[in-house]
Length: 262
Image 1: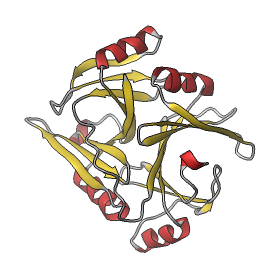
Image 2 (image 1 turned 90 degrees about the vertical axis):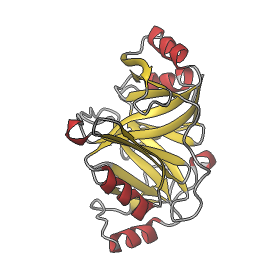
Image 3 (image 1 turned 120 degrees about the horizontal axis):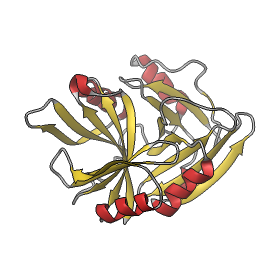
């Protein structure tokens, strides 16, 4: 059974630089740090409020940099993997021992090609929600959904996520579908008639009290925000602002209500 949306994973050029960025600017805590013996591989889990990011540093062996997968916890990985394959979803990698030596992992592709990891191990690595600092919630992980109905079916029927909301925003020709599992949320973004190539994982979103105030604070500390931000959010009200992490990964700030309350 799949019981938790655990983290978003990304490849980085320099784990130390990335850890420092998320700790300094976003109040992240290093909850797991492991270097694989004999090879230049470092795995770090950072927790921000209630959500986690896995940082994978492969040195110069990484196939790409930035977001790479979303991961769910399973208490029966072999059964869950076989169930997904029998349902017609594509295997990327069959269950195997994790590089950390802690449990087993496997990978499948969702209907839009998002790489989905299943993990079976004794610990989720999660610590109690971090309540000090500027970040109130790890609001969501946003991914593209080329076929929204197919993606919703994958995540609700086969990954057992719960649906929170679905809304079409005419001004942007975008439909947002929000799902929940464990302590974290997933945003499926369907871009209407637009066909998008490239990365399937778009951004992580962090909820703060005041986007304007947080933008001003981070700007003074040297963080560069994308042009035309802050601006009114396309979903849920409030403001939004976006900036990039050390490897180009997009980070969004929002100051609306929690997704479970909208």
